[in-house]
Length: 413
Image 1 (tube, rainbow, N blue to C red):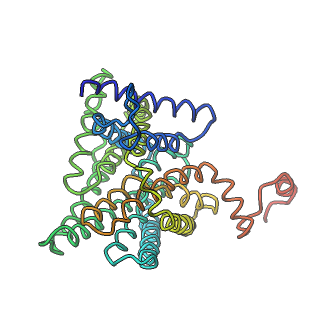
Image 2 (cartoon, helix red, strand yellow):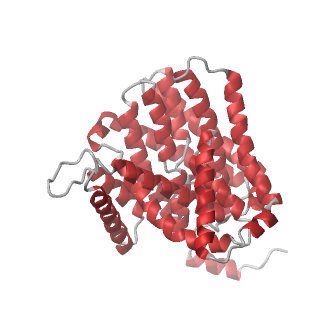
Image 3 (cartoon, rainbow, N blue to C red):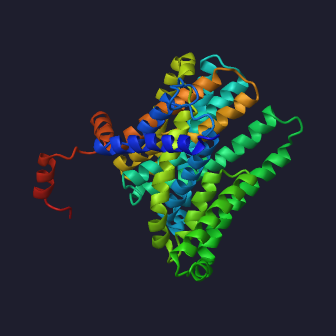
């Protein structure tokens, strides 16, 4: 414990190295942070003069990472309008239902296909059905896509996904961990979660003038203390009623997005978002032991392929139903493909219930691959769409010849 600050400082130095390297080559920082976290950590050798295992500081680094998730989701919430999300309600429900149902059914079938038991197959289905809010938020911000038309639907699907997660965890916890769980208690828990989310939308619609007045604080010091206090309190309280703390942060951001102070909050939050967000992905890598990954490599690769296909198809269905272009629709599936913190939460439930030991290496490798592949495919979404477009011929490829043809062709009568 004497070298606690030194350990944390060493971890931050590694994070800084990854950020510098990624920025130098204009690459996504997420894969570098995760891989570096895997290379070091509790499974790394002790070098003596400098301990890269981060044993004493593990809890602090993990906690700093959790703060990073809150800032990422809070900032994402600030970027959107509650009015637009409400207007897109039908599209969100349809798109979220398609996305969750397709991934869950395919995941359940895949669990049975690889020879797992009923409960293990249910855990696999839950794992492949929930995307990573933290990674999605980071990718949208890094690629400057928060203003894209499809991003509202992406955000809506994330919220819908969390409602599913609340339902799934409530039901599975009752089945696996509780002897006295009742259907009524599960239904009440789910209804409380949904009502809690709706409360923020109501406050954003009818309480904006009161929030404007309350946040009319001249001092930046006092202003940021008040905002951050609200953020951490609401995120923490959300967990007590079985709503993920990250979603609580997202809802708080959505509520404040309707105020006249939203731009001021964004400017103050950005440095914290970038700093703590980077620590989250590094801490995520620390939790993965590369020595165990080989035990489930083929099962994990099969699940990754299944997830990629189901996400692209579900994204296309959701986007086209909402009237978006084929390209924007393909962006939906690619953006929400990453798996991360929520998938690990579902896996830990199965591990706590002492189900098949394959769940631990499977979850680690499955999440690792999609945490790296998801942001990469999102970054290269235009190339992915052009490749798909050659096969399905949704629209004429954009070339110099097609542009010239469009200019020379007469307008429709």
